[in-house]
Image 1 (cartoon, rainbow, N blue to C red):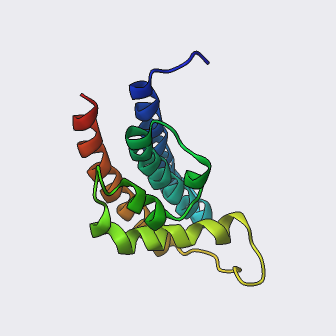
Image 2: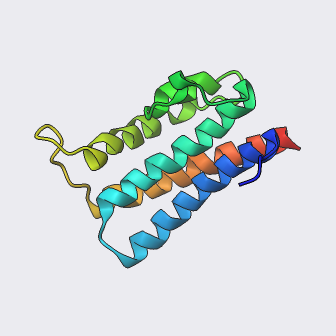
Length: 138
């Protein structure tokens, strides 16, 4: 892959986040893999938040390689304030570990309603980020 300009790299992170959301929405209609849908939603938001971090810091550093959306959102506050989504970010963050790394403490399977709610929260957050970040990148 050729080297992307900084602006195009940010757009690529946004695109990947939106692509994950589209896949989660399509999967919701066709399957009952609700755990994976919830995880995809978390990943979609994470990628879009990391696009903001890239805009601010010009790189994703070691301390940015985390999956807690609330912590990542705090790193973006100087450019895009996501605090109105604190509850949604917490809920989405809580889907990541149980889906990816099951153990006795995380045997929960996510329901159809939780998957639907995850998609709706993700769509709202990504639209908010996308509207603001695209304006900044122009």
